[in-house]
Amino acid sequence: MQRDVRTGGPAGRRRKGVTLYAALGSCALVAASAAPAAAHGGGGGHEGDRYVALGDSYTSGPLIPRQVDANCARSDHNYPSIVAGRLRATSFKDVSCSGATTEHMWKPQGTNGPQLDAVGRNSDIVTVQIGGNDMGFGSIIGTCAQLYAQDPTGNPCQRHYGASGVDQLTIAIARTGPKVARVLQAVHDRAPHARIVVVGYPDLLPDDGSGCAPSVPFATRDFPYLRDTGKRLNLMLRLVARWNHAEYVDTYGPTIGHDMCKSPADRWIEPLQPASPAAPAHPNAKGEAAMAGAVWQRLTHGRGR
Image (cartoon, rainbow, N blue to C red; front, side):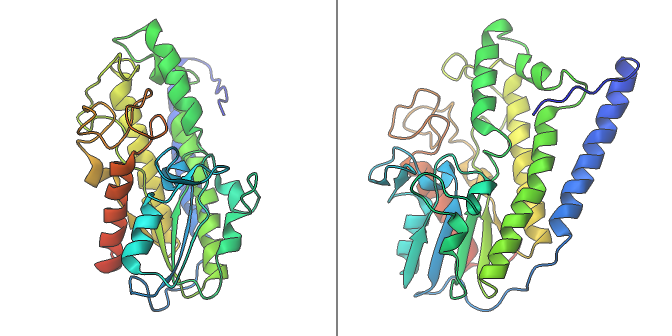
């Protein structure tokens, strides 16, 4: 994912980095909006709707009891299951799977078939939470944790991803935008009357930029860097949803104050050594319930973006 950007000197690297960032951001949005999607049909948010959930581990809820699919680490207390219960859905298909990328919308993942196969012309609501693995979320967490010891009070992770003169995580987000757009366009094609809802990612780290090492082993100035990276990912998802006739659900705002740095009683995101049943750096049962609440609020209170 890292590509060396070489110019004549430090100032040249900075100029080229800014230019590349701007170009990639523009390309992501252009690609996201290049193929106009079908307009919304009726329905959505009504008792008896047919609901399909697509997504990665933030959707599937790994290690949260009760696990109902070992291959995908899927819980029956994840946010789609909670939403489906509130909807009293006529049919409910949750094909979310831990480790999923946008490619797994079209390709099988172990015993989980291509996720888009669950979407049909009679689908009323489709939620989509994807993109974190496309930008390398797991490897980013591991890399930043390993670099912590080198400079505990500095920003070794930010320096690592910016060593070429342009932030590689910003590039990764920009490159992920068109991939998410392609997923949304495919959902529109398969379910032209469905209400399509893009679900953002929750707040993992303190929103005020403070840290909590060593319990969460990131360097002091890497906490705000990683927080801002998460916000950029969510901004991309919001924009791609808007340009592809989908709605966006903010799960970051509702989870502020419940990040992995909080006490076990108050946190909805587990740290790298979880105290409650959940995968490291993932929502626990309370976090999934909070995301369900945000999705339910969107489904029952209009289509604003």
